[in-house]
Figure 1: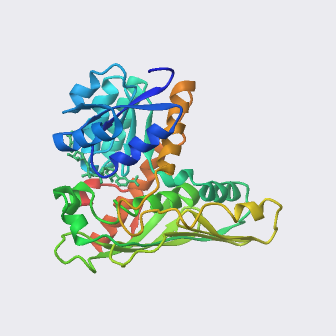
Figure 2: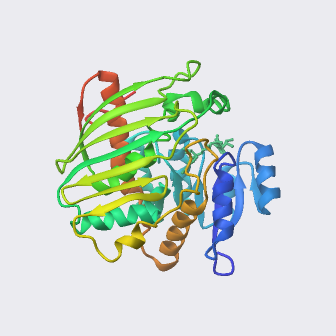
Figure 3: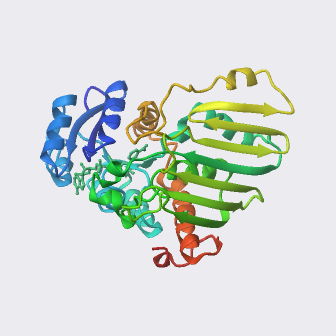
Length: 355
Ligand SMILES: NC(=O)c1ccc[n+]([C@@H]2O[C@H](COP(=O)([O-])OP(=O)(O)OC[C@H]3O[C@@H](n4cnc5c(N)ncnc54)[C@H](O)[C@@H]3O)[C@@H](O)[C@H]2O)c1
């Protein structure tokens, strides 16, 4: 810690790294201390842009006493080992989504962080949006009444060049398919708002990227434990890409978030605060529909500041690792369902069967 600011180190200097760096720079609670990557050119680009230290490995960065938190922003299949190592070195961790590629890995990371008494939080940053928080409060206070439908429609576009830019982006076991990579955020929102899911029935295919051995499109039905039903539609094949929608329909109201904006907010019992809630978010804020880097860093800043407050006050972060486990289970359940060609009821008994 320096000047009462929490010190952060980024493990990974790729596409998402500048978003973390800008969020850390913008916050009064945090400071970017260092970046570590195996790729020296990427480290140099980050250190010269953001004026921080550079390291060639996690091990080297973990020796730095100024670092309180490590942001694990390497490819999806590499998160587990880095998180365990950082926790064992006494560092708190902020893990990019999906937190890992298996539930066993999530449980192992959780155990390592608990043992070391460090905090573990996940960057499913859409949870921090004002529109999402308004939906959650309305659900928790019963405004929707019985929820009938909770859906997401993610009609995005990613180019073949994006997939071909790195080996992990074309590997299903690295978590590059649309289901566990891009759609993870919105499955997470459905899980956070209406979950847990009970049964999932998924179909996956590749519509527009014939050179890439991945699903670029997912269609799934979900039965929630609450009795609600839903649809998960997600694709990176749909040029030019339009804003994702989250839709909640209950017996007494309907809410639809488009991008980060509250598109529809209508209840049988209109309340004074509803006019303001309808203004939440902005259609001008990019949320990833048209390209991986077409994104604002504001949601990342909210996650980072929440974690910083938790560390500084001794409290808990809003997005604890454990709270994202059901999202991963739902995602893995969809892969299993698509593979078996039949509905899958959660929990998954044998996750070895997923891939
Ligand atoms: N929250 C979001 O909106 C969002 C958006 C994009 C990516 N992500 C997530 O962020 C993570 C990184 O994605 P990306 O697009 O930046 O990937 P990337 O491939 O652009 O960058 C990853 C970096 O990690 C480095 N790396 C790999 N192994 C390493 C090791 N052992 N030690 C040090 N460095 C290592 C690579 O050299 C690379 O520079 C993924 O988990 C991804 O899902 C999240």
